[in-house]
Image (cartoon, rainbow, N blue to C red; front, side, top):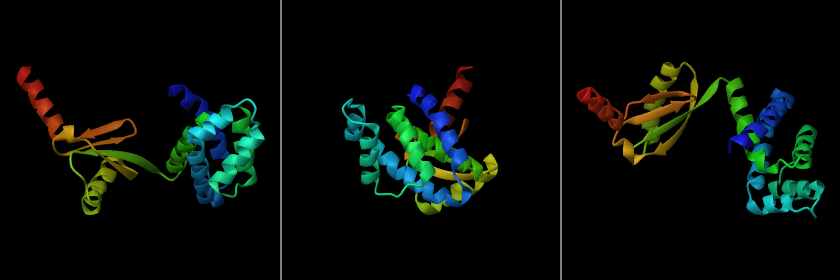
Length: 177
């Protein structure tokens, strides 16, 4: 997986530099649609077939995605296909989205909770988290029953663990020391 991420990075950066600010939302939607098609195993198999040209694969992807691509985006997709990098396209789009969020000053906050969090609870959590991390956060919540209670928040390489499991582990290490 790290190899695909390494392959995807220069493509994502080049695409990010090419996008005009005014067209950012349209490009993001088109890229998401194209990446969804590229994730399909049948499309991957088609692209890997030596009897199929990159132009044929391009036509299939654009038709399946049902989007109109800007000229720069068309050229980007053709380059990806000609270089045999379709497998890395979904990662390119993810890295592109991360660059867009960074430009907008937004970071992703992965919140792990032992129990489901409703919208009101999430709003109560996000205010202090944004102050703590000093930037606007976009929350993604995932359930993790092993936490017992509380939450564990990961923002980039920073972790804030207020779970019961973490507290019990700290108490254990203190008692054993």
